[in-house]
Length: 167
Image 1 (cartoon, rainbow, N blue to C red):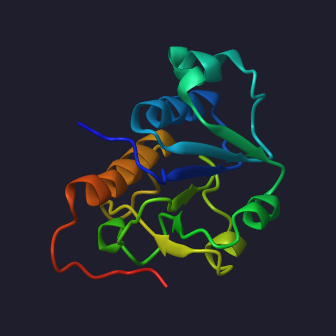
Image 2: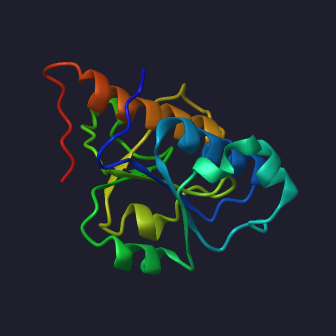
Image 3: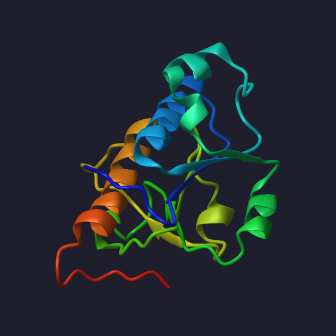
């Protein structure tokens, strides 16, 4: 059973486009205690019925913060440890060492994280391993995989001897 973290993980979605994905991620946040950060522009209204339906009746259990752009998000969280998820990163998610309070940052369903964010020095780029010649995972699936790996490491202990401390 999961226990609430003193410093929860933050799941950061930069320009998400598909309401049901964001709703599913909100539901994930409600059941794991992670916090949800949305960075505009969004491809939908925050009042979208598909967004609310995918989140079911969990919205009252979700900490949600909205930022007008990535720079505004960075300004409020200048010293946060960030892991930037990209299908094109060289380092596997499983080589990363997560700590309470980390920010897991994901791009839009159609474009992923922009190159200026991935290469801009605001975090460590990581990827979820996939078979060759595959473009990407569904956003809500990728966020679920990452969130539960981070929770597994923090709550249940990471495997001894793994490398990959972010810089």
